[in-house]
Image (cartoon, rainbow, N blue to C red):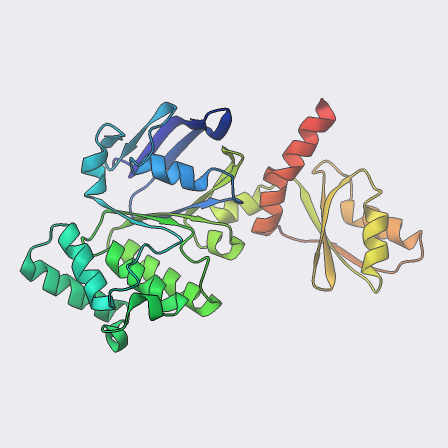
Length: 314
């Protein structure tokens, strides 16, 4: 089957600033593909190139069988695009927003009526169809924005940090809605900086300064992390952290509640024993064990640790 999105060497420069620096993508249909990265990593710029809003400086992309940006208009008719600002008209009611968007999308009267009724039911908007969009809560606005973005039943849905302004329960409900769309055949490309959301994606690209630092299924990325993860529990975490930071094999340390997560070079010999003995030599009794990586560990290993290794080599 032809992939939903295929890109080769895609890049975008803004004067001297390189926002996206030659990325390759292959995204299967009826899946959720995630871009994980901080602000400035190139997530939004890549989305805008893929939907034809930005012309690449170099490289090429095919979206739903159409070359972009040359056939951008054909692509736009097949995709929905939802930004983190939810692009709604605050002075219009829920029903008026949906009616306006359906008219812009060129739906005939009968189809408009059917689709609007379906989206109001599907996204639980019935209790406030007459309420102005500007008076809705973050979660309600999010549901309205998703309803509007899917009125024309797009084959591809692009979501640019869509849950940045909503509460955890609304985020959870939103993701259940996304999986329901995938079950109907929709392909979804979502950008996020939330680790828990990234773990929900079928595949994931970790973006760092316009490049793909790591790519694959979240569980495979965690399994194949280029580091060893050690967890430490003791009564004096601050002192333990200071001691561990002096060990050249320790590449990164983060505190998770009452524990420390340390990333060590993969080639370190008996890493748990090494750290246990280091702490014991300074009078610190600690529980030390090797554990599986989480997605935050993967992100750190793929970005900061790679930078540190490059600086060390230089």
